Amino acid sequence: MLNRVWQQWRCMRHVPARQLLRRLMLIAKRQTLSRLPSSLLPRHCVPLPCVEHPPQNPYAARVQLAEEFADGYALTHLNRRFSLNSPVDWLLKCDPQATHLERLALHYHEFLEAVPFEDGRRLILEWIDHNLPFRRGYWLDSWNSYAISIRTVCWMQWIAAYRELLEDTERARILSSLCEQVRFLRRNLETDICGNHLIKNVRCLIWSSAFFAGKEADQWGALGRRLLRQQLDQQFLPDGMHFELSPAYHGQVFGDLLDCAVCLEGEERRQLLDSLAPAAQCLSQLTHPDGLVSLFSDGALHMVYSPEEYLAVWLRLGGSHVTREAVTQLQASGYYGWSGRRSDVLIDCGRICADALPAHGHGDALSFEWDVDGQRIVVDQGVYQYEAGENRLLDRSARSHNTVTVGDHDQAKFIGSFRTGARSRVRCDRWTASPAGMSLTGSCAWQPQGNVAIQHHREFEADDGRLRLVDQVAAPKQTGRVTSRILLHHECRVTVESPRSALIVRGATRILLTTDVGMTLQEAFWSPDFGQRISTVRIVLDLGVAPAHATVEFCILPLK
Image 1: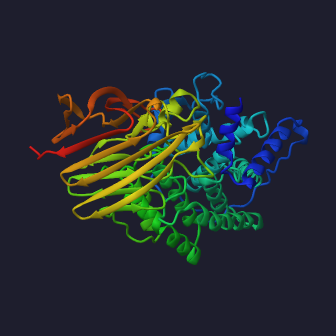
Image 2: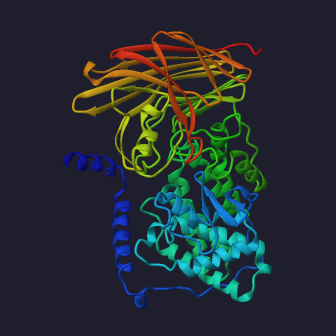
Image 3: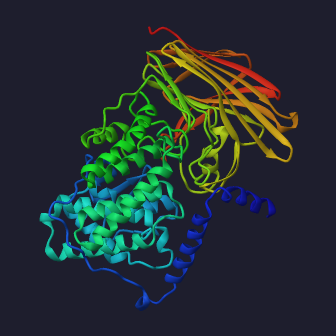
C-alpha cells in the first residue's frame, strides 16, 4: 500500500498544481451533475446560425473507416468491426470484450467520412436521440470532452458537404445538438490533462467559430485563439517536437493545428504556419522511407493521416516546402538519425516521457529503428492496446524495445495505462554526423530500488554499409542477467549461421549480423496498428551478469 502511494506521488509530483486542482473540480462536477434529476440539469440547446461558406475538410475522405456489408455498414476500428445498423449499441453493452478506446471511437463519428449521406443523417439523428448528457458516466464516452472535440468537427464537416440535402427540421436538430455540445466543451475543457487533448479542444472551438455566426461563436473563437497561442509556447520543444515525445502524436497534433489554420485568415494564419515550420520538419525527419511515421512511444502507423497527407495540406495552406534531411538532430526531444543511400537509422536518446504528461512514455531509451533499401528491418514493437493490464504494461516496458534490460528492472515504473512513476535519466553524451555516417554515445541510468543503481551506455556507429552497437552495463550482480533485444520486421527471414552470427534477408536485401555474445531467436509480435499483432522474430542477446559488454554489428551485403 505504502509503495503504491509512493509511486503515485512520484508520478504526480511532476504535474502542475493547477492541473491537479482542475481534475478534482471536474470530478466533483461530474459526480454532482450525474446525480441530479433531469428537471434540474442544465441544457443549452439554442442553435446559432451558420455562416454562408463554412470551412471544408482539407483531407481526402478516409473511406476505410467503415465497411459496407450485405446488411449495412460497420465501424472498422482497432482491427475490429462494430455494427452501425439501427439501433446502434452506442455503449457497446452487447460486447463484453469492448474496451474504453473502442467505445470512445464509436462516439468520434469519424465514420461519417465513409458512409453515404442517408446513413450519415440516420446515425447523427440517432445519436442525438439516444445520448443525452449527464447520465451516470457520461464523461467516459458519449459526452467525453475529447470525443466531443472530434465528433463536433466531423458533424460540421459533414454538414458543409451535405447542407443542401438536409431538411430544415433535421438541420435545426443537428445544429441545436452541435451548439449544446460546443457549449458543454467550453465549460469542460481538458485543462487537467492539457497536451494533445487540449489541442483537440482548441481545434473544436476555432472550427466552431468559423462555422457558426454571432457573438457567442466569436467568443468561442477568441478563447480558442488565446489557448492556441498559449499552447504553442508550452507544448512544442525548441527543436520543433511536440513535448509528449511520440512521433505519431506529434503528427496528430500537427494535423489538428493545420485544421486551426484552415479556419484562420491573413496574419493569424501566417503566424501559425510560421510557428509550425519546425514541427513540419520534425515530422519529415521522423518519417521512414516507406512514408509512415516512427513507432517510438505510443502510436500507430495509421493512427490518423500519413505524414505525406499532413505535409500536402501544410503546403496548400502556404507552409514552406519541407525536405527530409540526411541528418536528424533533435536535441531537445532526444531523437537522432542518419540516412544514406541504403541505410536509414533513427535513435531514441531522449527522456522516457514528458514530465507533466507521462501518458505516452515507453521504456525505449537507447532503442532504435533501422531501414535498409527503403524497407523496415529493425522495428519498434508498437502498441497493441491502451486498456490497462498485462498487454499495456508489456508494450511500454523496456523488454519490448530494441534496448537493454537488467533482470526484471524496467527503465521506469509504469503504472496502469497512462501513468509513469520513477523514471530513468537519459542523455546523449556524444554525437557526430556527416554525409558519410554518424556516431552517437548515449547513457541511461536508473535506480529501480533502494541502493541498486543501473548504468547503461550504448554506442551507435552507422554508415551506408553497416550499423554497429556497443553496449556496456554496470550494475550489482544480484540485479540479474543483462539482455539486449532486437525486433525484426515480420517479412525478414533469419538464418542462424553460427552461435554468434545470423543472416537476415528481406526481399533482395541481405544483412549479416555478428556478435561477441550468445544469441537466440525468440517468437515475438509486431503491432504496427492498435489491435493488431503480427508474428515475427526477436533476436535476444545474453550479456551475462553485470558488469557486461557486448558488440553487435550488422553488415549490409551487396544486392544480388
